[in-house]
Image (cartoon, rainbow, N blue to C red; front, side, top):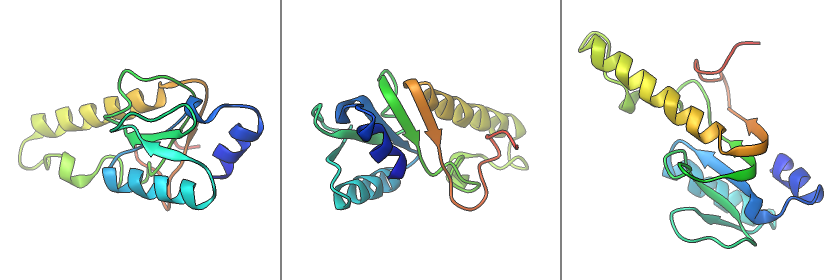
Length: 132
């Protein structure tokens, strides 16, 4: 919320800010937290206005563009979620394809930002993120 508040304080309009999450549940939680701190927010699953921060899943971000984007929940078990990946011992080709699809999804979410991108996680970051 601090980053979004900073963007707003810098003059970025609400509708120019996007928040992407891997799951609907996390997106809904983000909307609730934004609203609780007095920041108008709405789901991208429905038409949101320029007076609201747009929040949605990484899938929903496809084809959209924002001045600033926060990609949230990019943690070890959140991106990729285990449910989206075929176990390697079951089918190595499907496993590799699933991993690539999830990498592409994160890439799409991150490339929705024209000016500034912030990626956050809780605990350990996703293996898709570079280690620093």
